[in-house]
Amino acid sequence: MSMERLSECRKAIDVLDLKILALLNERTRIVENIGRIKRELALPIYEPKREDQVFANVTENNSGPLTAEAVKRVFERIIDEMRTIQRDKMF
Image (cartoon, rainbow, N blue to C red):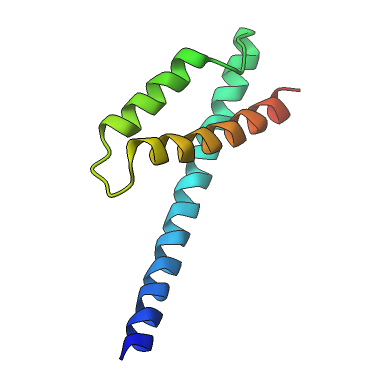
């Protein structure tokens, strides 16, 4: 019975991982558009104030069980990857 429950939980994780992947790719498409707009407007890729806004948005709206610090670390990594994508698209 425990192995069956473990298997069900893992299947649920697999489904959620695909949803997260789809959302990350959707976010990436928007980030690519932002990169093009920044290039047209000659704006910098790195905008620390905007990143602080993103961190505030996700940590203030986090209902757990992830801690605010954990959420921030996850989004730091996401933003770092998105910055790389913008750099690649801008040059």
